[in-house]
Amino acid sequence: MHIEPIGTQDFGASVSGVVLSALTETDFAALNAAFLKFGFLVFPGQSLSEAEQISFGARFGALEFGAVPLANQVKLEGGDYSEIFPVASLRMQTNLGNEAWHTDSTYWPVSSKCAMLTAVKVPDEGGETELADLRAGYRDLPETMKARISGLSAYHSTQYSQANDLGHYPEQRPGSLYHGEAYLRPLVKVHPETGVPNLFVGRHAFGIPGLSRLESRALLSELVNWVVSDPARVYQHQWRVGDTLLWDNRALLHRARPYDYAEPRVLIGTRVAGEVPSELAYYPEDREAEAGRQALQLELAVLSGGPQ
Image (cartoon, rainbow, N blue to C red):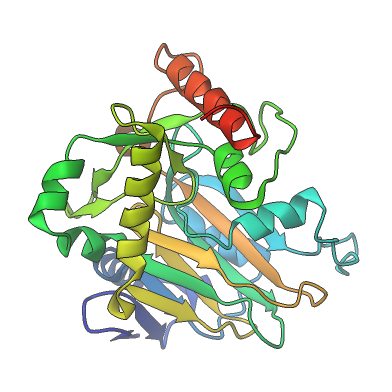
């Protein structure tokens, strides 16, 4: 097995000489150490099957979901794929939302530990996946900004991010991505395994308690823009069929890039749930949840044309 750093700041590595579907415990321990160090790992040409991706993902912890098509098509019985979904469909509107910088599952009570994608079909141009280093983003912040954001938190919701980014207001349904809850998370997160602090922001974040709406929006936008402003903190993966990309949702932002939506783009995704002690905000039945629901409804009212 060979682990080759991609950048110069311990951000990303490419792994060769290993078969993910046949890992020894020693190999996995080495991969896990590299994952924690570099934040993301690229495995070219692995061509993982759905079962193999699920099996590899389960080595990192309990799965939030396994081998789900994150795509503009769905797999049919017999192995063929459906027609490409129209851009106006709920699936494609959700996909388009993922073209803004985000971390996964911050809109659930327990946010994600890590996620992976395996490329099945890729467009001729575009459709890349980009990653950005929230660890280096925090490390490089001016001390005055570190002091300013210390102790601050923001709510996280997909209903907010879809409305804010796309003007998309999907039907609110319990159990769906658009469930009516908003979860309060610190702007600065200490990684539960490495102890390294990093920013914890992205498109789902809004409504910092203690700040006005305009101050909150300006600060959250400034922090995301800061992270992605330095090319050394950003990596773009040019997909080839068979590639697998694994990243740490506790320390990195990511986004999809646009492409010709009439072309197929099929990536199989597995997401690992975070450990409750470090990734739990609160549950919907907890007392704290009501403040999140109220903050979300007020924000959606403003975004849909209500008073500021």
